[in-house]
Image 1 (cartoon, rainbow, N blue to C red):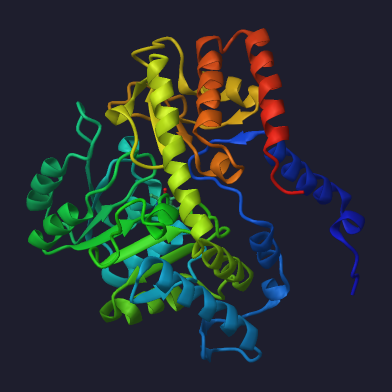
Image 2 (tube, rainbow, N blue to C red):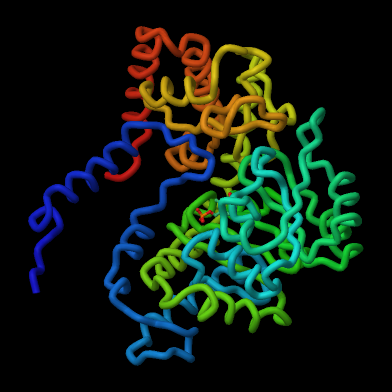
Length: 415
Ligand SMILES: *Cc1c(COP(=O)(O)O)cnc(C)c1O
């Protein structure tokens, strides 16, 4: 076997890999779903466990030689139980979307009904968009956020639950800056005799640290991604009460997946271990403080924020009131040139398209991992607004890029 490093075997791929590390070092990641996993998580994910087939679950595998696979999966499960207080945890979903698929497969039949938040109002593709398997397999009705307040329209959800008679209601979102009222959704689901799936993909870390209320023990099922605020490397997770444990485990394997990605599960184990520390609690608190500082400063500059602020790690700005001729993509492209990487996003009441929407979504998880505090975040807000105001002025973008260079040099990532 050739035992050389990727640098020697495949310089083209090696260049892309080191280029990506450098890109992350040299830019500010403000995509709300992104974060920087620790070196320890990266090592675990890049380990020889990628070679191992471990179909089944710890102690009940279809293959021999699983003692180390069992060890990492058991550690990941134990730590997840401690972090989120769940009775049963499945750490095998390859991603958050696969976690949701696992829940649907466990309790729905094709043609059953999903009631979820509209994608342009902050929902996720896997909640039943027509382009996703969920939208193609199940009947989907969507609730919305209130046009005035930007908060989930719980009364509207309640009305829809009565008229549509769903089999499952999905809460938890991708572009929603406010705390979710899990109990309220649960009451609505119970009244409709529907299951409640709380998808905490974005806020896994905030919930684990207790800076966002938890749906565990409230909703029937809780799903999440493991690479967002929880910083445990790419993957998904499902949590539920014991009564659903068998159905969930069978739905994930063999229902939806084959062999688990044991190297990723090792990453989850390491990341969950890190998240049990007091440092992580401080990190999650700082992430929210930074998002609030970002929101306040953007508003001081005259930007209009959906819901008027944030309770969590993200801010959604609607450019239409302050910059009617500027689109989300204009801003996304100019900010990328300046070294600030975020995404254009649809906003409630979207009047443009999903490809060139009216809003921008900004998150603080990754810059907080780098060590940014409120003061540093306020400066980033100032830089962002300078670019929004003059996105087509190269000298302004150049100026901002120089300051971003200084900031990324000061706040280093991987040595
Ligand atoms: C990110 C996200 C997911 C899962 O995404 P993957 O890319 O499949 O991990 C699921 N639900 C919500 C609400 C999300 O934001």
